Length: 127
Image (cartoon, rainbow, N blue to C red; front, top):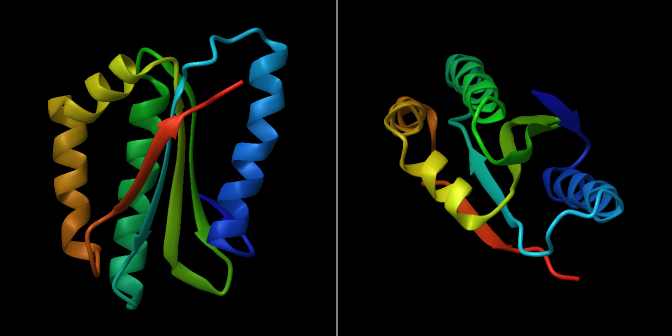
């Protein structure tokens, strides 16, 4: 898991840094992007196990068809706060990953370490 000084700032910086590279590579403008925010229970066990689960989810996503970018970030100073930044070739690739049985299992494994449900913000990259 990568660390940033602020989850929101880290997410914005990662997405902003990714956009010019995608356009320079002439990617189609209708890529699906997703930013997910979450919070682990504030105890060492939940943070450790939750982080391991996120690292596994990241490896799983990076092996998926249609992934352009997938990264997890923890907030420095508050390691129980995290974000996931995802960019997919299209919404079909994102939906296929989201609905895959191994993805569903990992997301289920993550729940015992969470304070609240994941806060998912998805959209489409525009020109």
